[in-house]
View 1 (cartoon, rainbow, N blue to C red):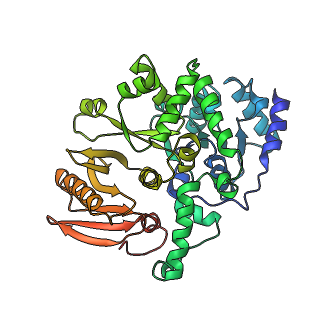
View 2: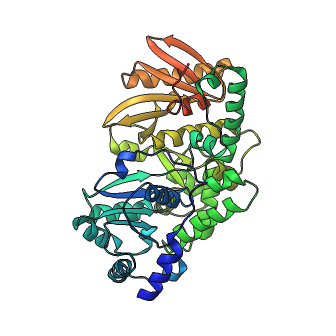
View 3: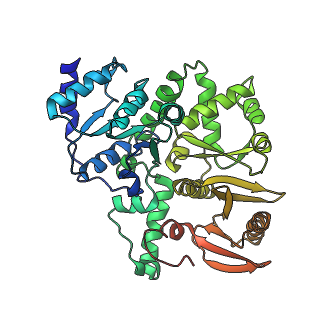
Length: 421
């Protein structure tokens, strides 16, 4: 085993990251003494980020990617052998990088031993539940976490070699350029490889790996047809409400508990997210209808049946993902009138947001404004935003300030210093 491990170590050691896009992450977490866990869906860039972090460190290190068919028989007892192989090859070092370590049951015990002995450890993984369960059991208080998503709009622009300047937000040419790239991003999404070459089977392969490897095989399911039909239905109705009962009836699943389990498995892979109606009663939150959002707009386009003009749906999904990137808890509001998103931080509702393609239709305008004002009143907020495809306005209603902002401008607000309106 040790000789095999040495071969793999050398095979994996050198990676060319010169053409890879630097991710927008909290660098303070990298320098923390705690175990750094990078989690996220397959192919969102976790391994690349790990390599980028490595390239910025000055000390020697150890690296192993466990998503390697030669390690299929690797067991938790083999970690000591791996450690010995590292030392024999490179001497004793204090920094470890482990990619897709979740593939090895019991990994968290070895990582805890390394951490407790003063080593710095970086790990990546693609299953939210497995990571949280194992980290919570054996590494409580010893780790910090980065949830990585497909590329944000600023990162998308980097891969296109577009670097917005302040003047681009005020000139006709600059705004037209940014809007053109935004329209592409809305449909192409943020998976790095797919951005570079969208005319491939990349998405199909990615989706099949998630369904068959991460859901069906890992959870030992035999209801493959029901699972596929459920994802197809949810992708076709992304951003819309559903109940477990109605979903079970639509798909033909006998028990609502099966629906709940399937959704949990899918959420664990980061493929989709359930959003609850906000209520101070957790029981009511759980009993109310949910809304579903997907990890990337390209997945919605690939997996679901979508009408020719589903831009409104894609825009709302895009905004949801950006809120998730910001680390906020997300809910929807409904007190006879709906507000798409309310955001919660540290136990407090901090903002409310509507998303619509356009406010030009008077009926749409009233619906969006009334829903937002309802949320602002409910949570004692003084201002909120309506995100649109390309409209700008500022209004005041019932002493509530409402900012109407193009989504592309809102997405770039932290990368270039500009006023939102």
